[in-house]
Amino acid sequence: MAETLLDRLKARIVRDGPISVADYMAACLGDPAFGYYMRRDPFGAHGDFTTAPEISQTFGELLGLWCAETWRQIGEPAPVYLVELGPGRGTLMADALRAVGKALPAFREALDPHLIETSPALRTIQKKTIGDATWHDDIAGLPDGPTLLLANEFFDALPIHQFVGKDRRERMIGLDGQNLAFTEDADDIVETCPAGQEIAAEIGRRLSAHGGAALIIDYGPAQSGPGDSLQAVRNHAYHPVLETPGEADLTAHVDFQALLTAARDAGATGYGPISQRDLLRRLGIETRIQALVPNADAAQQEAIVSGYRRLTDTDQMGTLFKAIALTGPDSPVPPAFDE
Ligand code: SAH
Image 1 (cartoon, rainbow, N blue to C red):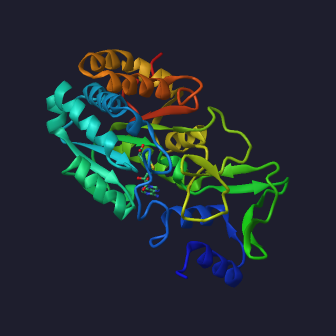
Image 2 (tube, rainbow, N blue to C red):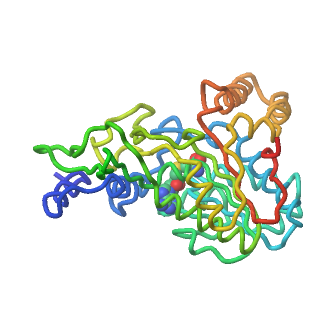
């Protein structure tokens, strides 16, 4: 039988001892040969999960208009980098570019799209969806200059560490017979995401040095707190975290306060979190939906309205998902964060 990531991880644990949750997440998602994102397209009805830009075109359109309005607020620098972290299928960026091309052609001409993406499979899809752009493996590869940055469901895929007990022992993954097993129970867990904090700090440094703004959308509580948030999803259903590594999506809640602190310490101004519902409503999702409906057939109308509900209803993605904004030190308050 062909080797699997599970075989490799077991061999690694036998050789080197238990691995951290962060090492496990990094291998499951990013292993060049077996990582979940590296060789497949996980999105949509036939994939494992779906995301806001795949649910409604209004999501990318409104985020594009947020960038356009912010660009005007900061004095219309040209050129300006329009950066997306983890663009998935490229749907958000394509919707954003189309919307700003119509609403503010001067911004469309001034902007230069840059995409941060590690997965070769998803880069291929993004090239088809978006066309001309520049790709980088990580944010350190971006050129210096004014930047408008978007990230949707990017930070939840970054490796977290888990700690337990008063002495904050790191929760590791070892072997129990032939199976992967946690070395500690899930009581009293505290999570940290140094990779996310480093990226937030890097964004903060860039915004404070060169100007611009960032809009980060993800899911997690508004305030930091303890708890085990590591979860696996396969085929639109929860899946045991340690089963079939590399075959399921693995995520953890985003600690918005930690991201804000890291970016502020690096010189940026931080706003939020606000709910996704408030963000999209303040950016005019209802007007946009009303404009789309008359041009659609009955089936499309239903999809447009149900997409709107999924993104904004409080029992769907409306409040679980939240947004923070970061800006350079002298920028005005960005759209939707001034209420
Ligand atoms: N933003 C998209 C996709 C979210 S899934 C959407 O909303 O549909 C996470 C995305 O981040 C994928 O494109 C994945 O390949 C990418 N990714 C995950 N970890 C990454 C990392 N460390 N560096 C760069 N990209 C990463």
